[in-house]
Length: 429
Image (tube, rainbow, N blue to C red):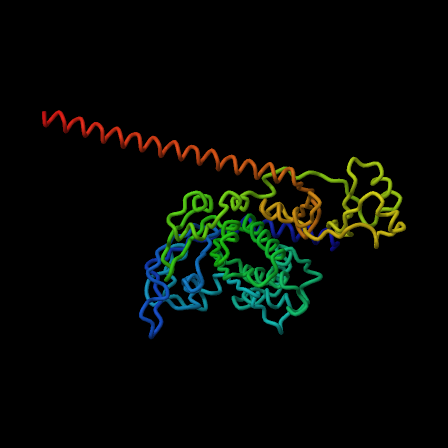
């Protein structure tokens, strides 16, 4: 079979699997964990309902019990009391090993087995549940493609031969391999650098759009929670729920001072994490490839409306920004010409990610990429700043409206007090 046919077949299989995959409801009822010798429970009677296909974030201070609560869902930690229901089925008394095969689990630093290849790591759970060799092989290819890794390049590698970001992608692929309805993620991106972390977050958002799993995700980073979550559970000590709501509701109407402390200053700018690159204009930009003749590249630079073009590599990924005069100064060699593209964003990236990339690059634009880093367009500073101004103006109008509501309430309260005073005076008379 040709590479094109294989790619088409894999894409079709991935698409059909994505359509067939749905999440499951999760209900926690009075879930409690006590450790011997401790006067207080680590987790104290947590009650929560998570909808099928929802991405819910547990966020809270260190030691508040968020990871313990997560691990009780697949019973890596056994609850002391309370019930856990997945799709209505009480799993509290189920064989925990069987339960874990039905619940995907991804952790910080990926947790890959170092003596196994990438393919063997991903195949682990499907093999345990008795899938055929042909089905497992097909699923490994599908999962690698789904997380943006070329199966031909990565299936035979060992974890030590991967970057931190690649290891985390394989960890997610392994967690999804047996097609579980529920995926638990315990600070999975906490051990990678900020740029890689942003890209992994974007990848998770893209995967969730395709798969509609029920995902419970633990983090201590509130910005990450805003970016990823359909709903956020802000947890106090012993996993007491301070607020369980959408990111917009928590940003605009925190329940109390504890939640406000997590929101922090600059709530309007944090709302940049709620708007995606796909929601704003992604412009086309003049491009050339490394395979184009040098004269064609030179002519396009000289005749274009912009003073630079974007050079793409053999796979169509952003490689270098070329400006007029670069080829002349580099004596016609692409190896020495231009400026390397240091950062890109996907359409699932937030406007905050895009703004940080633009400011870091200091050139007023950032390239937008799709699956496996292929170029899709450019977002510029003007577009991003217009969006920031719109958010700030919306916040200003909300504040004015809120102030008017308070004034009306005060006026109504004063009017009632006056009526009461008048009525009392008449009765005395």
